Length: 266
Image (cartoon, rainbow, N blue to C red):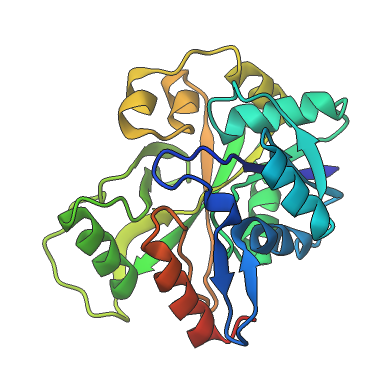
């Protein structure tokens, strides 16, 4: 099955304007933009046939083309990354069996997350969409709880059925637990990793629906699928010793750089 990876990137982020061009310094002291590090992560995915950056901003286009990325210009009217992926696919003339949305704020995404995600969607014909989930250890969960205590959104959590189909996604920490976990402890909370794999038919249907109440309240684009009765497959992935965090707020730069230094990522 042919696979297209789209990295949607917009300059006008509400919480962090200009985020795709924010720089992250690796363990060797090399500084690269967030969009470049996200593109480099995408290029490591073994079963991808094509990787493109989709943006509506000339500054992001110029920066992306400078490090060798293929860029597809999309409309500033796109409301989220899923809509931008749908437009990018249309602009390319279709022709792909699976479209992956590797959001441009997740530079620590290991290639096997995406590879496992693609396989999960291939193996589940009932799902329109697949997305990875990562079981939190105590360190990650405590980071989520600290962010929420200070009014920040540190990440999204997912709850799902026994066969892996999503029940809900939230910026709150779900499910509730009052137990304290040490850093290395396994917890019942799953971190939703901001990557999606779509079937083109599901992606096309998405653009015909209006945002629903839950999507609007949570600010989570994937809830539009659930609100319209479509199945999302949650694919549990393994960190294999890698740390993972998304860049949601300016304060996350230092956190991600510290993780890169600890993991020895250039």
